[in-house]
Image 1 (cartoon, rainbow, N blue to C red):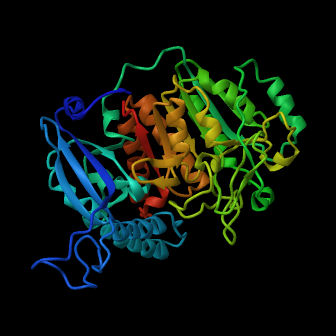
Image 2 (image 1 turned 90 degrees about the vertical axis):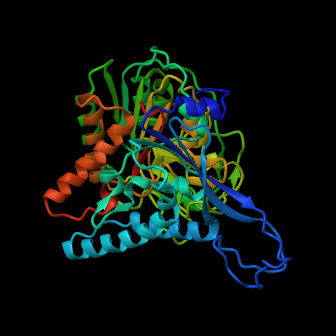
Image 3 (image 1 turned 180 degrees about the horizontal axis):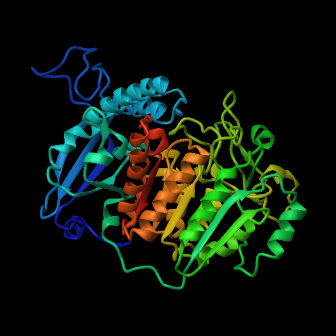
Length: 479
């Protein structure tokens, strides 16, 4: 990425037909109540402010829209953060709800989703859409709660979605990311795919698998272990669909060879050793996010995993998903938020039996951020809520997506809600077919994967609820 660039460089990087939509959550100063235009106390205006004696700043959203050929962006006010974030929360609740098996119930659930999504679209997308007429490709830089929204899954018309009717959408972490540096070095080639880890493998079995995995780089970095009783009790369930997913992707791969880590060989240590040398990383496993109230202890040890907050479903509990529940997005986590989510590998269910100087099958975002993944073009996180973490305005989402970015991966493909094991396998197969067989770029491949699932479901008369096709987004290099 370009290390130093400003508005002129960003504008110059936009090609004909491109547009950039950059959202901003900021603290807007409350206007004075003095003068003829003062509102009565208790009144609520467009921004969602209730007027009173206090003049403290109020969190607010706006968007900057820059079209190719323009030098100055349009500034679009969107309104107060409380209302927008409540609509995002409502949308996420509906988007992440599994589609019922009965068609009548599925259609009712989809109708409820579209109602919630329409409310969100009218607040955050329709105001900027008037500046986007004729745009063929739109780069979105989200902020705040909008980091957790897949705009392509918003409704368009009576039964369609933006992914079907709208321009090509792609996400960036910052405006300057549109100014790309040269391609990454060609020293990293091939695919490293992790799937169906044997979470119940004993430490001895994982050590034997590591010994036969071949030489790799050293990795002296260790994170911290959490003293969280809920996490110690959590168990990760098997993911049979992920083995078939990895096998299908490996069959499609034709450049530089594919290396697959399955069962007891799908270890944290093997991934750390081998990942830096590969062009594409595909990780089909459980993701996890720690709930509140899980303090870290033993600061010189390995790494921690996470689980749900008390009263929620523990990580790994559902047998049909890639992960357990997460705490509500945006909930403040104690200490370093990169310690509180990550990925599970072989042996994770016996993590407390791991030796003090060894890996425990729990790879935290902090540990990922310490790796050198500068030669990785794609990091595909085929697990639940891998795009979710602690949301900080102006900083993005502090979790796996930030960790892979810090480590140097050019593009991260991640999920925004819990994903079904089999549905994810189908989506991932469509993604790699679009890329490896169809020759599409990253942004086009993500869209084509969603469209393939949508076309199939429409042809079979099934619900088109985004739960089955809209969870995954890509952020970073769109090429």
